Length: 272
Image 1 (tube, rainbow, N blue to C red):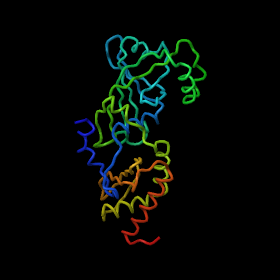
Image 2 (spheres, rainbow, N blue to C red):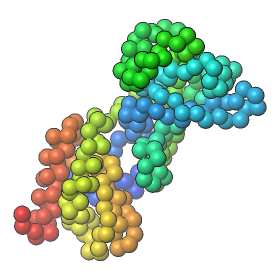
Image 3 (cartoon, rainbow, N blue to C red):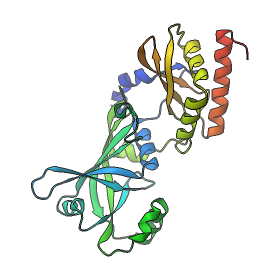
Image 4 (cartoon, rainbow, N blue to C red):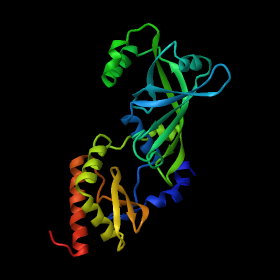
């Protein structure tokens, strides 16, 4: 039994209220972690202090790689670099919307592995790193800086309340980012700013809710569906709904949400 299979009871909290396919399909925790990886360019790097072994945390800028590993460009004079030279074991924390909102309700992942200085492919990393971090062009050729690559051996993924697991390295590296990752924030912002009334209709129609909904917001959207956080009758609830088919782009998401709003209005007996 894999660790992903072991967390099915936790995932029941996130099963869809409305699921036209009745498949309750969800991205794996490896997929969620890979999505965080490709969308993140900063993180907190923890190394082992070379003097007394105390964990030492520092902020680093990242170049996420297609296989799930990371490259960072650090100075030889920095404490974390000196620590890595003595002991390459590190962890890297990446958090969704770090410093915004209620942090414990947001997705985050800790990537554990070993960091080693890059000796090959420097020209390719240099070009890609400047593309992601344009300000690095001012110091990219400083002789005391070097690229280090973090090879991820395992991941601790936490996707908010009731969603967490250890993801083995092999499972993580064979997972892939959600195809909506570039569009998700825009979709979520648009729904929360302009379509709260539709989301309230979703909950009333498909959850059969009669209590007052005093607040609601979308906080997750992926290729299989979306999740909302609602305050119903004074209590917070997480509600997930599935799309009628797996989607790949923002246009497909819009069609799904419009169709869902129409169906909700029909159930509620509302007219357009």
